[in-house]
Length: 408
Image 1: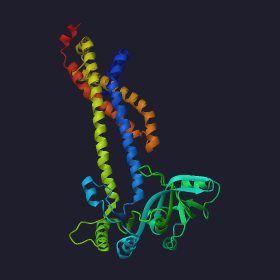
Image 2 (image 1 turned 135 degrees about the vertical axis):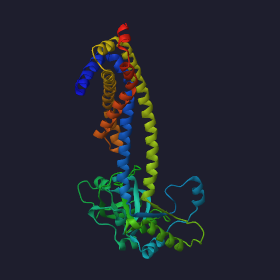
Image 3 (image 1 turned 90 degrees about the horizontal axis):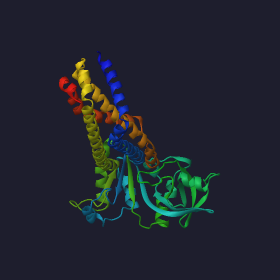
Image 4 (image 1 turned 180 degrees about the horizontal axis):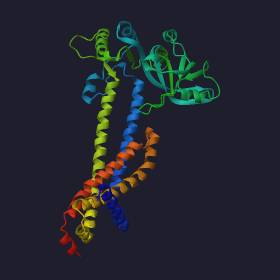
């Protein structure tokens, strides 16, 4: 008999056996169903997290260095040593732009919040950003209307602003926002531009609900001594380390850091976020793998038990098949196929349960169950069936036909 015929016969026998024991087979699959739901949701959530992170991290830019008072990831001991660092200043930012040979553009940033009003419309706690004329290039933003802040407006602390797309849609749904004067905190600012839609950052901040004003205006109207960030866009990404060394030397000189003393500033970059995210993502994946493995282990034990019961109940059938010429391979294939069918059925049920649950994940992370994820879940179910069904099938294949025929 050809092997394809053996498989076909094994499938027919397995389907018949499962039909005659529907309830028992269904209860057996519960553990595998839970495992498949877990692995599917975990894979979908991790995929959504990765996409959201990659979309957000692209906004930072791989070629941008951020000079700040503190590192993005500071431990408790390091924080105790660095919390009294002096603020960075606008004058230092201008000197960095003048002295750096590897910087393509240098922008200045400061962040705060204020209520924004136009007529009878208002928005509370809007993200207000103080920027310089080069910040658009450094941040990599585009505009749908108008223009960015000019050097003269930044130098003269002019009351002008660039607004996010959500604010533009809320305040000016039927008209252009250019030339209109909105109240940012206590000051009236003329709208000179509207940012292209950017969506949410990974942390949940809505980048379309922001107002950008000149950094000099920011220090006048909102925060007198803000915690300034100097953002440096480097010409060549292959020279990021050289740029960091150059900026370190410039800042140490500007801030008069004595030789041998540690820096009183930090230079942050995208790579730090990626490294930290990968560490967190790896930990989450390990936790998910443990939970999934535990569920599949319990489900596999259930399949193994039911297959042992099936072998015990069908000992005489096995003896008859061997007596009329069935080989060990035929018996082994028969029971392995039955175990795989049980597991695959559980996998399909698990996917049916997980599918609507991924809609909840999609609401927060914009991730749906993909075809590769579904296929991987079914593969895991099939492998679980093969592993858990092998010992019972091996036992059935090694039964002595004479002893099997004597069985009642």
